[in-house]
Length: 120
Image (tube, rainbow, N blue to C red; front, top):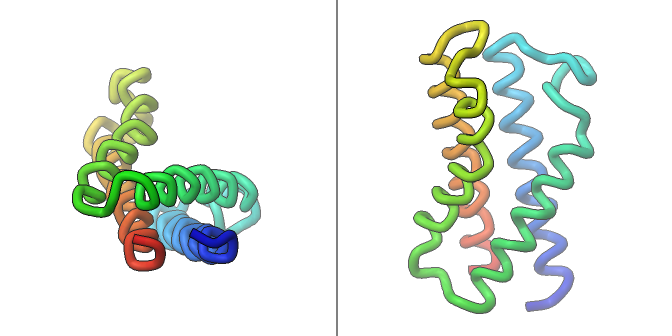
């Protein structure tokens, strides 16, 4: 796999993450970093880079047969610990916390789909 393929994959995943968060911040009315995102852009760039490196390693070494399961598990590892550590007690209740977790997992699976289409 060429470096430019990984670079383009990272940019695609970063655009997906930034776009997803911009929409999510508008829907939940929870922007605080720069007016249209919930965190600084560098947070999404680094998250996209780490997921892209892991995803391209997966696709280059093991294959692409079970990528939805892999990215669903990664999404759970990324999103689930926060609500569990707080006992699903967020200011707005357990239902929104579970919805945010499910949407975060869906975001990771969508990023896996982008990687699968580009490098898989």
